[in-house]
Length: 71
Image (tube, rainbow, N blue to C red; front, side, top):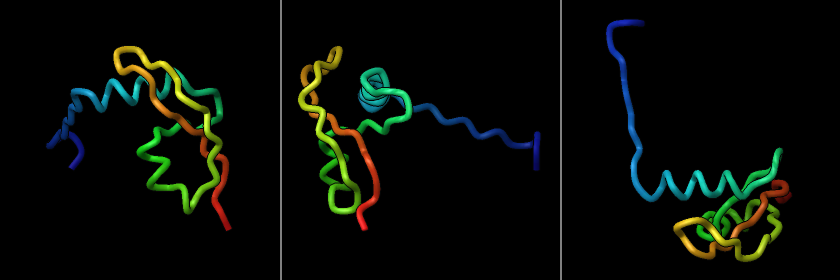
């Protein structure tokens, strides 16, 4: 029922910081992913490596742009 129960979720910690840094280092209309995510999706999606990018408070992170789904 609307108005009876309100769910609230808070996400804290390193995951939020990494997500914010990934967004800050992306480009409009692009999907920017980390090396860990790339390793999970590389068989299903074509990705363009961006190299190591300096990330505030994290150091250097390997990043990729997702281009399209593989056939």
